[in-house]
Amino acid sequence: MASDYDLIVIGGGSGGLACVQRAADYGARTLLVEMGRLGGTCVNVGCVPKKVMWNAGELAHALRDAAGYGFDISLWRHDWPLLKQLRDEFIARINAVYERKLGQRQVELLRDHARLLSAQSVQVGDRVVSAGSIVLATGGRPIIPRLPGAQLGISSDGFFELGARPDSVAVVGAGYIAAELSGIFSALGSRTTVVLRHERLLRHFDSMLGDSLMQIMREEGVEFATGAVPKSLARNASGLLELTVEDGRVLGQFDALVWAVGRKPITTDLGLELLGVSVDWAGHIVTDEFQQTNLQHLYALGDVTSRAGLTPVAVAAGRRLADRLFGGQKGRKVDYDTIPTVVFSHPPVGTVGLSEADARTRYGDAVKVATSTFMPLYHALTPRKPREHMKLVTVGPAQKIVGIHVIGEGADEMLQGFAVALRMGATKRDFDDTIAIHPTAAEEMVTMP
Image (cartoon, rainbow, N blue to C red):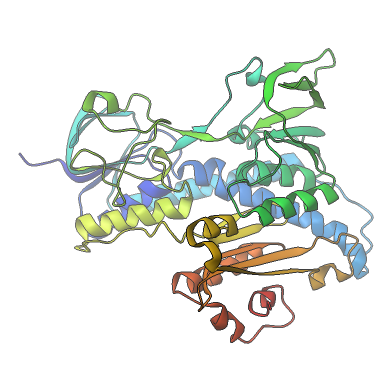
């Protein structure tokens, strides 16, 4: 029996949009189902508005640095509500652009809830539609811990709803979201405390990065409560928040508290259980490296799976899936071993490849490491003196580079090119033989001893 569409994508986030648009470009008959705003987490409550806020934080740092370069800035005032208004208007324009591009590609858009009836049919509202292939790209949402008073805090989604900057704030978590939001709050003037279950930020990154970031953030006035496992959250008689942790400490008082303790996949009422779609212990849909679920014709990508929850990964997976299904590119897939990523903390962190610890576990004594720590020229005249830290992790006699890690100004922009070099198999000698661009921070990457 003929299908209504060649492809149905459930979820209009970065991965879903990338997949359905690429398929439409190949001439496929396509349907996108999305109840919320187009763009998903990244565009609406993630990467894009976060980067706007990070830019504001960078400008705040620059204003403080300006005196070192002879500027007299006597007025320092930031209008958070105006920034929120301008940011939200910008995001609304992006939402509209996405919808316009879907129309231009003749992608049908249905604004309703979708539930699987089979691997090739879906109920969308009152309609039942079918397709040769179905892609689940429903994304994820922030986790709010199950403990007394937890609802008094907000999630990373709630961060973007704040109408005013809190004077004092706690951020609970150790991952990239916690590092980013705490850096933004601090840069814009909030008294900021980061609450960590263990001893370090970014525990799943190379240890140099988390250690260095915490040192720099402390120098900027951020406080850390380590070994602090949340037990309960309450509002005191003054209306301020107090966080009690398992060892009996009471942290506070805070105007706001942000839970940045992880995310979970959105799979509610998708019909997965009825069809026997495999999920892991955390509820993520299980796929192979080609985004294939355990059911033929049914695929999943992005944050609803457990494969590297990053926007560019979801986009790449969506496009490559469409390339295979409709572009005749058999075998086209994402390389999950060399994914570069940036944490937009203050300063930013860039990393690609293996950490030193992971490399030593895999390769043992064949691992050699080169490092550089220095003061960027920009800070020669500023009151702030954050240092830049870089590390190359190499393997074997040829010292093939298997890991690149950098924290400091410009790390976010410089990493992309170095990630290409790593993926192409560059060695330490290749870096050594590359002429440095002076004076830059990036030149240290090719001049390490």
